[in-house]
Length: 299
Image 1 (cartoon, helix red, strand yellow):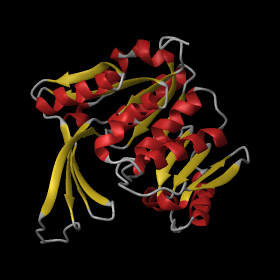
Image 2 (cartoon, one colour; image 1 turned 120 degrees about the vertical axis):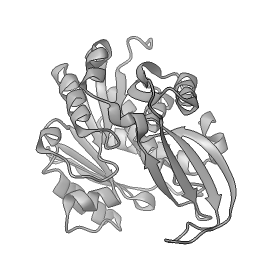
Image 3 (cartoon, one colour; image 1 turned 45 degrees about the vertical axis):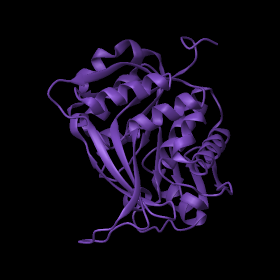
């Protein structure tokens, strides 16, 4: 099967140039700590997910935007290295690219701040200009790092062509009924699940399962990732299951959720049943978190 005939995973979303800082701990409010290393990384939830889908063997394409700056040039080069079709990543004149700063502690956990930059200029016109790509899309991935109106336009266009829509509702924010009605599969982590489901604690795999059963009222399929506990899935057709996390030596949790979502989309585009697709995504996430950042390009 050639790249032109393989089912296409299209990601509509964010591209950020990330600054990764390593320190003994993360600072509290008003505190200054001394770090011991830093390095740049190309990311954004959209950028991470499309690279993950390509790594998982999918034909992967990106619709997004970057600024006409050095960060933007680096983000485009990263998509090229990953084999992503980025013909419809727009360069916004006079705008700054999206960026983030993430601080990692010795345990591998992190906190981050994003500055959206050019990502906030994404609109329905970006979808219209990519109509040829939209028509070939088997699975569309969306996130919450771009304007919701743009996500709605993308979802409508792909649904009209018979594709499936996966929403990674991250970071957590209220979702309109218009967008929810267009989503086939909702993927969230523990924090996002608690925000959307309400009155549920996702601290265990049982808690994640409870959350999926609530969230399936919103979308036909709900998936909740619960970090080191595992992942739970529930569908309106009655299929519900939980998979324990694969035991690995943790190096860094950064990007684990995006790796899961990209690998899930690749498996769904291949026609894998939901349980097999979730298992493949669970395994991909485990590989990522046990691999040092500098070696992840070789996965």
